[in-house]
Length: 292
Length: 292
Image (cartoon, rainbow over all chains, first blue to last red; front, side, top):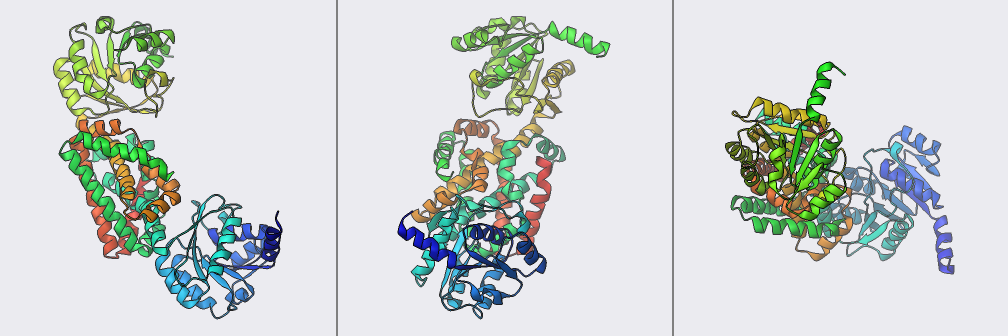
């Protein structure tokens, strides 16, 4: 280990990390960062969650009051999306001016500009990891390991704040990406929010079948292909709605691109343009590995 | 074992099964039926395939000449879809009048009416099993076990022919379904052919992104949800095209139902009807298990 790495680690172990919102993501961050040697202070609205986090040794200290964050050098806001900006606003009353605030929301555009206006040392972040289960009880070691972590600075973002969050993401073992909030939101619309809508529409197309015999037979015959294509469309409806709500404009853009592709496939089949259809399916086959 | 079962097995072991087309499906049928005690005669256009089937003990006898089928009681036509009807026509010159002919094509409407016109003892069938690999080399024991096997009689189909194919499907361990060719084709359009087009359009929507940074970031960030939703759309392009070609009308009907659902989701998001969107996603979540 080089001297600068040692110094860096030594300085890190003196840093205090604050985590507001001890759900799955907040809980996983607490576990990993405490293991990395940080002092980790957690805040939850529910006292049962505070007790659980303390009992399981996930945090150095925890409570229900944001005043606990006054000691933090870097605060991760891990609340549900709608509460991120109000939480940053509330934190401003307690934090020392030097404190860096970041969030883990899956949509960045409006959050980053609103939160930066309230706290100049704000940096948007999105660790792209998750599980089917939610809540502190589902938290585990290493959730972010080898997963993408996108940091989304804007023109006014402080470089030292970006570096501090990037350093922690790297320590978590994440694959680090930097992007504008807009590019981030368009990319996640395409690869995460669009698939939910596309997949849900597949289920609804089958459910809308008016012939009861055909509908029942389809249910009996559906196999792995249908199972995979419909999986994310059959997921948590609150989460799907929230994606659409917070990333509305980028998702609508992706849906229009998708609709255009669908219309083109329908046209090719109607016109019996089999060579052109095969060419289109070949491109999908060739290009898919780039997304894996 | 009851006396009638013993008699039934005894009579079966005297029956000769013919298989035309020794690819994956024909090869798997040969393996399982020979193990069940049938004499199995195979025909392939390629002499290398004939040699391989004989060397591996998959068949009792095999050759390149359809005349070999003159000894068969039940013939399974396992050729590519475009060759099923021409093969039935060619077989008619060799078969005893009592012989039953069935096929394994994944679309039934036009095949069943055309083949029945050429051979009254024809019964359409569709064992719904497969693998990523194709050809005789990929053949294995038990491919049809616990998989659906749809038999598609029409008004003129002989009941004893339906019973004979149903008995074999049951012996293979398949889950047996009977349906009209039309209902079969609409059901497989919905759960098998539509997902391919829906999934392929997802890949093309992402590929059509004009901002290179967004496109590249999307490729880095795509994870299991995108992987699953795009899987069948990135599959064999010839197979996808053949589905569309042979099941054109049912697939177009499914695509129109799908497009209607997509438009409705776009409208809900445009109008910010979040409760209605969440209700729609909830129905998808609740109903999906019926297709698993």
